[in-house]
Amino acid sequence: MWIEENNKLKQTFKFKDFQEAFAFMTRVAFLAESAQHHPNWSNVYNQVTIELTTHDAGNTITEKDRSLAKAIDKILK
Image (cartoon, rainbow, N blue to C red):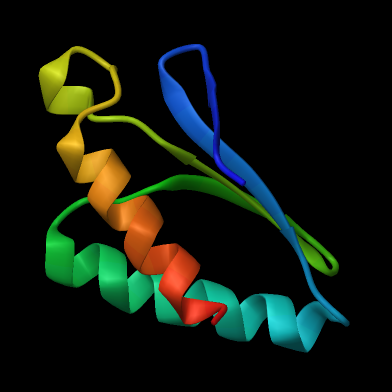
């Protein structure tokens, strides 16, 4: 579930291991590149934390963030 916090959409995803986390990040990277909208994110072993905000709009949440969040959610279904 995405949380709105400090003008960002944020979610932490947990996976079985590092390999699954990294595979998820790779899939998100392709989505982000095709949308020309890149996340702030971090990875520690089996966890990936993603923060979405639109820098061009003054670091606030826009439809670009919501659309990318929905696309990321579809990866996991």
